[in-house]
Amino acid sequence: MSERAEIGIIGGTGLYQMEGFTDVREVTVETPFGPPSDSLMVGSLDGRRVAFLPRHGRGHRILPHELNFRANVFAMKKLGAEWILSVSAVGSLKERYEPRHVLVPDQFIDRTRRRESTFFGRGLVAHVAFAHPFCRNLSKVMADACADAGATHHVGGTYVCMEGPQFSTLAESQLYRSWGADVIGMTNLQEAKLAREAEICYATLAMVTDYDCWHPEHDAVTADQIMRVLAKNAETAKAVLQAAVRRLPVPRDCECATALRYALITPPELVPAAVKRELEPIVGRYMK
Image 1 (cartoon, rainbow, N blue to C red):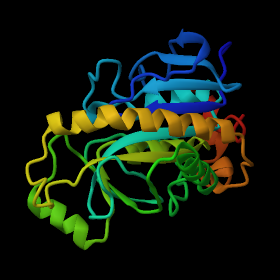
Image 2 (tube, one colour):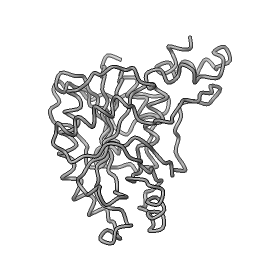
Image 3 (tube, helix red, strand yellow):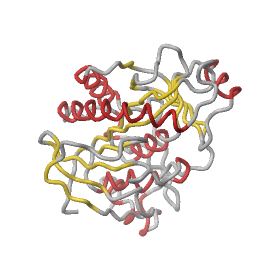
C-alpha cells in the first residue's frame, strides 16, 4: 500500500480521534476478513507515522462481540505496523484501582464465547505461544509514558475479558475477585491474540471507569456513569499515547517479532494457494 504506518493505535470507548496528527489521510483498507471497524486515519504524530482506528467505529456503533478483530489487526499489519498501542475502558476488581486510574496489564483471563481470534485455519494450522500475552518491551514503553504524562498508573495485573455486552452479575464479579484478577473489560483479548499471530508488538492502556458491581457504592453500574468518567479519561489516554509514540521505536528483541517462526505446523506445499495469498502480509516471510 502507498500509505504506511509503523505504529498503530486502537482507540477504545471514549477515544474516537487523536489530536496532534499532521499530514492526515483517511485510508480504507481491504482485508480477507471483511472491513475494519472504520476507515483508518494515517498521519504523523511527533515525527512518527501512525495509523489510528476507533475500535467501535466513529459514533460508537459496534458492540464488543460484533467487532471484526481479524480485520482490524490485519489492516494494521497491511499498513506496516510493528507496534499496536491499545486503549480499553475497564472496571476495577480491586479497591486500589480507582476510577480515572490507568493500568498496564500483563495477563488475561478469557471469558468470551463467540469471537474469531485466529487468522489460521482453512488448511493452515499454527499455534503461537501466548503465555505472556502482552509485549514486554511495549508494555514498558506504555508504563513509562504513563509516568511522562503524570497519570496515576499501575504496572502489571490480570485483565478479565468478558463476553458482554451486559455488565457482570454480582456473583461473576465476586468470582473474578476471588481469582485475584485486577480489571474487567470486553475487547482486548482477541486483539492481543491476533497481534501475536501477526508478529506485531501489542500493549494495552486499561482506563478504569468504575469498580464493577462488587463494590457497595457501584452495585448498579450504568453506561451513563461510565461515559461521564470516560470523557475525563480520554484526555489522559491521549497524553499517554503521545508520550508512548515519542518513546518509539524500541528494539524488537521480544517473542512477538518472531512468533510464527516455530508456530506454523502445516508444510507449505500443503497450504492452499488462496490461503497463502490472502495471508501473505503475515506468513509471506515463511511461506512462498
